[in-house]
Length: 82
Image (tube, rainbow, N blue to C red; front, side, top):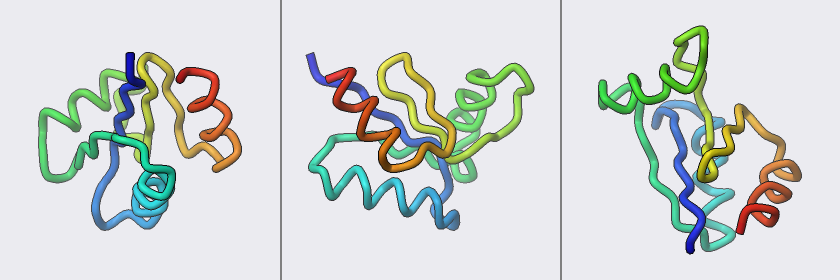
């Protein structure tokens, strides 16, 4: 079964753009969820955190949640969960 990758972020955010490029450069399918353009995506992101803040960018790999991971950390988790 394929790893489900979601990127919660905003188009204007340079870190979000970095993660989009990172995932695309590795040929990974992912869903980009723009929390500034879609209230449902923003609510879903809030639900991931006890403080209910819009902590973006956040990447979820199936059930694993990563907030601003380093490239090495993200690579590690992608390989581990594949």
